[in-house]
Structure formats: structure tokens, C-alpha cells
Image (cartoon, rainbow, N blue to C red):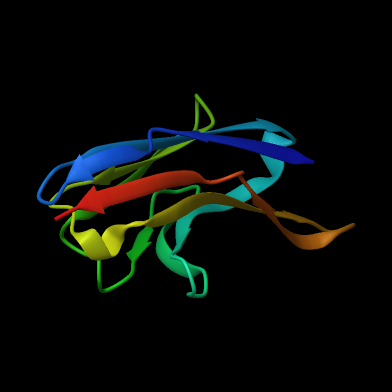
Length: 120
């Protein structure tokens, strides 16, 4: 089992910045990829960014160049630095951790979500 706790959401004006953090606990040695997803009201949850244990990153086209995902394996924490925020970035942001074991296969774990609201 993996537990994820997010922090860092809030209200910011367009053009501003926020930094989200997600701390993992539990069976952390089994975590491979970690990432951030977001869900706006009335929309499906969508990928924002992912990062592998080795540091390879992947971004949604809509955030590339503005958001940066990073990971501190020693602290079991993943971060999302969000710059040049736009009103369309308003959503609940969820941390994700993916684990693998030969016994259970691939499993996804989710945090409780943190709200990001960008005012125009």
C-alpha cells in the first residue's frame, strides 16, 4: 500500500506561480512512475506530467514550458512547479504513484487532491 498526501494548492492570479508537493509513504520501494493529473468540473481527469524513478519526464502539451515536475527519491516526494498559470489551469490536482510487483502487477495510487484556482 502507498499513501500520498498533496499540498500547495491555492488561489493565484493569472501569470502567477504555485508549487505542489506530494509526499509518499508506505511501500515506497515499489513505486516506479509518479505524476500529476488534474480534473476540472465537468471534465475528465487528464495527465499533467509524469516522472520515472530515473527522472525521465513527460508533459501534456498544454503545460509544456510552463510546468516542471521533479522528484526527490530520498524524501519520497514529487513536486510540480507551475509558472505562468492561466485560468484554464484551474482544477483539482491529483498526485499519482504507480507500483509494480510480480505478485500484484501494476497498481495506481492516488492522493486526495488539492485545488488550484487561477483568477483572470
